[in-house]
Amino acid sequence: MTTKTFSVNGMKCGHCKANVEQAILALDGVSRAEANLEAKSVTVEFDENRQKTTDIKQAVENSGRYELII
Image (cartoon, rainbow, N blue to C red; front, side):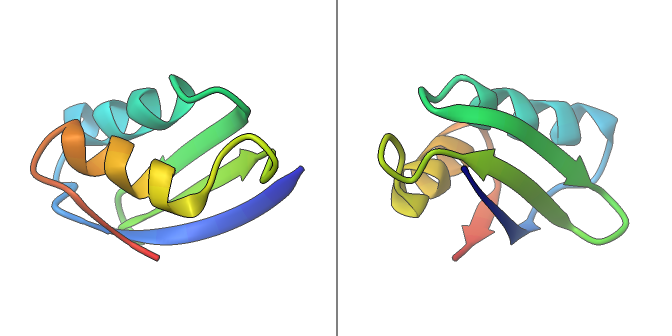
């Protein structure tokens, strides 16, 4: 398992935080996603053999008006 923290633009409230976390957790191979509103970031624990960072970025950006910086 790999743990990475990404910056996220566009998260402004608890609903945004939940959207980002849910979008990432829906991906196969992701075991943890924890967004931080104050830091405007999300920490993701995932299996790099099953998910790529570009897949995580796409999932976040498809879930709303968010931009994941990789």
